[in-house]
Length: 66
Length: 463
Image (tube, rainbow over all chains, first blue to last red; front, side, top):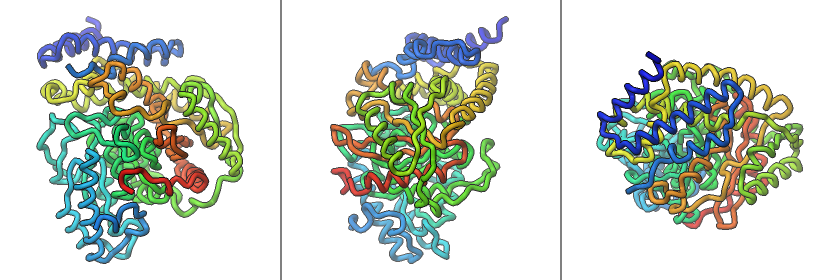
């Protein structure tokens, strides 16, 4: 099995067990994937940092209080 | 009683006389309990412990003997609260004292209180539903910035001359700039983080916020030390930071970077920064226009590395106590939980090669770089509250764009207050130098301190 997918599945299980909401989990996954994508892109010196950062904005800031 | 110490500088407070030290401690503790709490900036006051310290001030007198100080609540002292600004840690107590506090004790400083932080030090505005959102002494409708928000409020209000803060993505510099203070983020590794409440092991940095540059430099001198308990501590002999403070800047090459740092800021901020650079040119520096392509990558790289390391540090709390935490803090930390060990290793490897290339390129033609700290005018409390205002999200991400790159690079930075904006709130620039260039940055900041005489301009609250 792909170690990255294995890690992701393990972390998702922890989040579900901890009672983190589906909305928060979706946002966390998106933010993580975008930031890691930026880091990998910078490593390959071939990435559009500015456009990817816009996707990070919502995830890192979190959602407003209900 | 309180007026005897308010707005005093370090030199005026130095004493080895126990009775005078106790009088000063009582005055400062009164102010912390009164003015400090009214600003929502104080986490805990420890008058009895401080008075006990006064009985053991070491002789002979040093630059800090008998001086009452207070620090961000991340700086642990055995037996004192250890809440990290979070409801999830309510009632916890420190089991040990961190090295920087031991260093200040050894220098004779008196530790009076802990000051409010953003929860887990992970936020740039200063909002904290649990510990309080410190009010800016210049105008209480405005934020202090974060995460060393309480430190900035209490120093700006004149209660203590200096307070320690920590900086992982701008958390010393943003509050210092918002409150009209000097803030020093030293070279990574110069000041121990051992036993300080951690956010991000390879990015956290400790430094002072002060109204007077000399006072900030004196406290930094007292806390610089090699510490084998901090794996990233560096054993290096530094020159005095205070002895040559008035030596001027003749011949220094001052870098101005239009792309990203000036073009990416609101017009009044870019205009003010440009004016400061031009002033420095007239005061003995020579201005060099430069670019450093790719430096902006340090901003998102700091975001992912800090999220990855903070999840590693606080996994247990996040998973088991997230309902007692601010949802914004939870989301910021969860963003790092999907990074694999391999991702993390690659980030650290990238950082090493990126920084070598970037630092060599940046300081090839200049001695220091000047940029804005805040990219916008200081926002008010409501506009910047992500918990109440959905539009705050993009503002919050923007706020740290100028500060985060220098955490990734591990460089020393000094923030300098340079005037007031159209709302009567402080404006500032940051001076960035190569590793271990603190003395040169402080010398340059001193030229600006004398030129702008910001010390004489005081906020409405506190004066």
